[in-house]
Length: 133
View (spheres, rainbow, N blue to C red):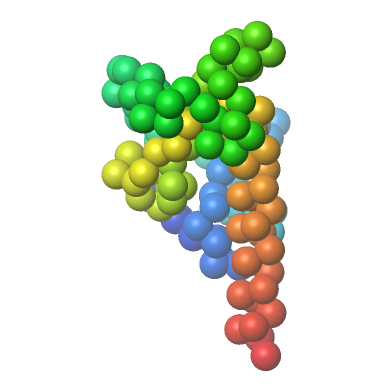
């Protein structure tokens, strides 16, 4: 997105995202929900590049085929109809593909994404409160 801000003017967060809003897309802050600006639907946000082919298999092989969070094996994950994923540590938006990757089943991946957003929102609120006082 050309000439788009990279931080929220209201809370200072760098957690900006795009969501549909009528005939346009809206750039907004995921932490405080502030509207940043409207963008053309044809103007797509930068997409995260895919991992190199075989990376998921390599990360899972290094972990002996177990989810790093819940401990389910690849066979149990397949039986339950879940997917094998990898998660960046620190998060991708901090270090890109340069960070460390851990194996997670899709259930744990979704839970960790939700918890990360909640933690980031909490940190942003705490930072705002501490900077006011």
